[in-house]
Image (cartoon, rainbow, N blue to C red; front, side, top):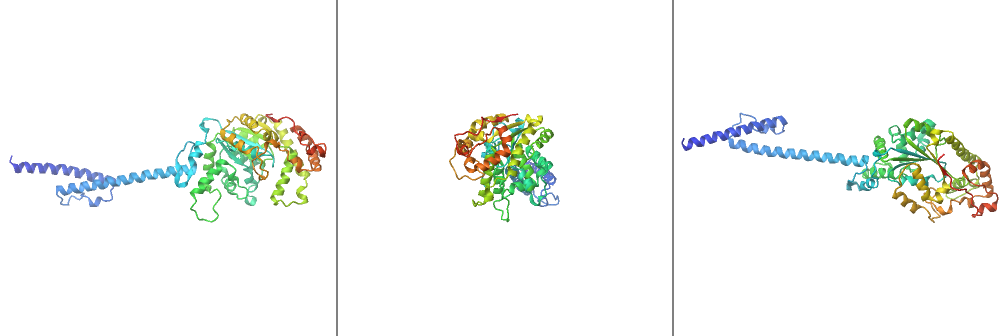
Length: 455
C-alpha cells in the first residue's frame, strides 16, 4: 500500500468519526430544541469539509455549555431568592441563622434567643390573664412577654369591641371565636380583625408584644422604599397575616393572652373543652381602693392634668360593677370543675411586694421553665424611683407595696368603696380602714398574708 493510499484511508476514517460526532450532536440539539439549531449543520445539503464541520461542532458545544451554565446560575439564584423571601416573610422555625444584611434585619437574634427545646417537642400550653382595668395586668403580662418561648398577645378583645362601624358585635360567641383562634395559634378566621388590631394608631397593640413587634419591624423594612401614603404601622399583607402570626405562635410552646375585657370567666370553659388545650387561667385581683384610685389618676392624665370636680367623684356604679364582677367570677370558678383545676388566683399587692418569689411560683403553676431574660427584666423594672412614669408603664416600685392610693383618696371616698366592696375585700384579704388617721398611717398593714392559690 503506497503512501497516498494510506493517507486517503486515514482521511476516510477521520471523516467517518467526524460524521458520527456530527450525527450525535444533531440529535442532542434537536432533542433539547436549542434556539440556534437552524445555524448548525443539520442540513445535509450543506457542503462542509470535515475540518469545517469539526470547527462548527466545537463552537456550538462551547455555546451549549455556556447556555447550560447560565441556566444553572439562574436556577440557583431563584432558589436563594425564594429562601430569602421565606425567611423574611414567615420567620421560619427557630434556628434560622441567616443574617439579612440587605434588610438590616438580624434574624439571628430572633432565633438564638429561642430555647433549645422546640415547641414541636413539648405539648402547647395556653395561658389567659384574666383581670379588670387598672389592676396591674400589664406588669404581669410582661413577666411572660419577656420569655423567648412565649407568644404574647395584649388585649386582643379590644379589636373586637372597637372595630370600625361596629361590624363585629361583642357577643360572647364572638369573644370565644377570637380568643380560641389566638390561643390555638389559628388565625384563619381572624383575617379581618387582626390587621385592624395590629395597625391601630391609638391602641398600639403591635408594640406591646415582643414577638409581634419584631414581625412588624421586619415587614416595615421590606417596605421601607414604599412611597404610598398611609403605609400601615405593621404592614404584614392581609393575605399573609394568618400564616405569619400562626407560624410565629406555633413555633413557641406557650401562648399568653392578657385581657381586661372578658366579663365572664365561664366562656373559657367552652374553649378548653372544644380545643383540648392545656389552658391555664391566671386571675389577677387588686385592692378595689387602689384600682379606683388608679382609674381616677388615669382620667386626670387623659385630660392633661386639668381636673374638675367630676374627675374626683367616685362612681358607686363603677365600684359596684368592679367588685361584683370579681365576686361573681370567683364563685363561678369554685362551682365549675373544668375551670377550677386550671385556675390560679394572684393578688397584685403580693406580686409587687415580692416579684421574684411570685414569678417563680407563677411559672411553676403553669408548668413553664423560667428564663434569664425574665429575671433581667424584673431586676431592671422593679424598685424604680421614677415618680413620673406614664400611667401605662410596666415599671413598679415594689417596696411601696402599692399603697399610693392611701394618699390619693379621701376617707369619704374610701368609705364608699368599702361599703360596696366589703364582701369581696374580706374574701381576698383586704382589711377595712376605720378612720381618716388610719388611712394615712402607713404603719397599719391593710393586707393579710399572701393570697396566691389554686382553688
